[in-house]
Length: 495
Image (cartoon, rainbow, N blue to C red; front, side):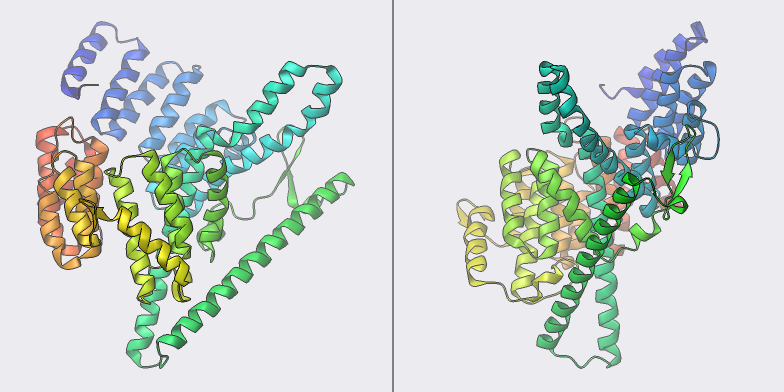
């Protein structure tokens, strides 16, 4: 709790030496290593505790969770499978039991490992569980009225009003939206590089107006394809429901469960089709619509809405989300600052007719005058200092002066936005970020890791290698001495 992990380990080692059969001591030791930043070592100690009492479901759950956070999904599946039905369908059994904590943890672990398709499958399974939960409630409406259990019926109605605001759904939906945004950005970058190569070879003789027209046509075709795909899926679902009622559901789409029921065969178990989707923003918008209705008071919902609508070129909706985010958190929040800079940079790019990953493809159409007027008025109020409108670089510099010295997260946001707005200043921003505060009140382990990842990301390129090495050295020696991340970063920098 106070960051004195070495002292905590020394104390728990004394306790283990005194009573080596007490499993809670090994769990506590794993917890210390978790907070110290060594998930692999933490998982090994919790797994050791589980091995001392193989019949304890709590220890099994703890070991599974720690293995997933150590990015060992296969080992975690084997461990949790000890308490599921035997056979090769362990994960399907967990899906049938709606084990949502496992699916959230597994999805996040797979995402860290770069297995985006499989990660999306896990997180979208949580969305499917909530759809099933809502549909299952219909059976209780007539039952409660017939049995006159009105008090329970009122409780049911209140639960239905808030079921979509459950932390499991928010966690899974936000994670899935973030991955869909990453897929969209990757596709946009690949498309921009392809256009650049074509233009360089002299094969593209289109002028700016023709390019905008071609982009608009491609966007409309993609939207039409997405609409047809959604319509086809709805028709297939309706056909399956109708066939099920008639008792003639297709057998080739089913396989037996352990209890004799039928389960639909998953034709994309690894999520390859999800990862290769041509319309990731459509999928993100579907999840985001539910979040905005039921979790509008969650900051992450509004920040994701700002990001999604900004990429779709719906800048007024993005502005609305940004204003709500500013109402939920201070304007000095690093996350809100990032969203503000990125949104108005995209607006500037759209107004200038610049296309790319930062500007939504939909912005190829001319921006209406009324939209431009509203955005301009709001920009003068939001992107301002001392009551006067300022440029985005000046706005970012003022944020850095006010917050970077007292918060590592704020210093990271300022440096990242500096490189985003002015790539020529990336080296200077990296050098300043390497000196960010690492005190207990100014920096958490997650903040320090985020700062280091920013310095090793593409916007800084090779300009920040020495700065990243310096930050890793400081973090490993001054504050996070047991962190496996910074230990590996220091080793990689010195090799």
